[in-house]
Length: 172
Image (cartoon, rainbow, N blue to C red; front, top):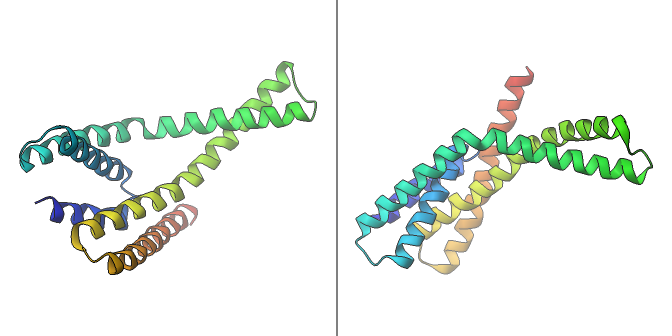
């Protein structure tokens, strides 16, 4: 019963992992819940699926409500720190200038994290999606590796083209 569900979830991640970030995180939560249940509770498969779904829903909710804030805070803090450190190396430190440099670095950090975040999610969701599909459908080790690589590349191409299209609509 888990194999078809994993194949469907894997296919969804390959096509829409970035666009549906909450789904990506929810699927990862589901997988984590299933793995923990399988390793620590020796119960029926339906219990494993229910626990996986509960953990997946919790992860998805966290992704929906905390994603943007977490990304921006991380980008701001890291960007502010890096630009402040660079300014310090150039002898521009102290006083109000330090705060201005930190804020500018934070804004740059938010922009960088936002840009790189898309490609990180595309790569990771394509990897996870390809893994789920291959694990649930293919047992032959040799062909499974080739299929995994092909699905991984296809996932990146599909999601990358959707990202470019989305960015094009925003710019146009």
